[in-house]
Length: 229
Image (cartoon, rainbow, N blue to C red; front, side, top):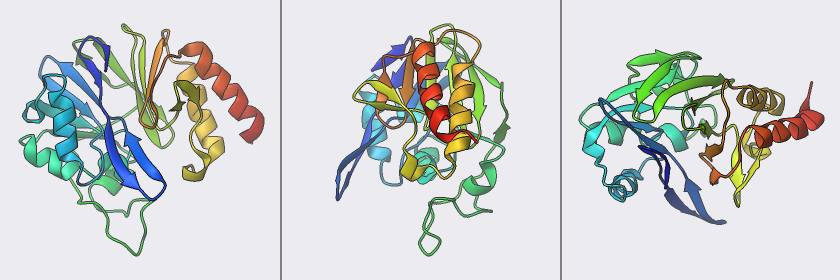
């Protein structure tokens, strides 16, 4: 699915005991080449390459990978992507870097199990950093624990895990996977207040929602009523 000119929603899947899980990274065309937002799980790189090919894109053309955070479903496939994409530049928020590069163990991973392969981060991101893309500026919005990305000229918000799409309806993050719902609520408040109208929200879990600034604010109000400190 093309969210805006040169902004593509991708889908990766994994079979689990309770059914099929889907993940939705994003590919963004830039003057330097393809920028990939999140890399999926270990073992999903072939799926990622196929999803890119469906849009006429090539994994070898990825010049940069931007991680929204360090969870394994976002960063686990990074090492394989870097190998197949000929060593792209890796970006991550400064809070995520120690987990991605191996100095810290990923928060949600089993401490008695294996972690995904560590990868050095080339550039540490902070709130407000902006990438130049074919769809206009793509601005990083730090929501505690995550990075979201706003493309104001196209009205697209890449919300990562801060929001979910449930059959096309915008909802808050899944509580069973969210250690701090009060913090998550504050994250949604930040997204509701981004500078510029949002018309489409793309979520890593659930995919794209036909929703915008008004719906984000409604989700925030609902979460705030239940989880405010």
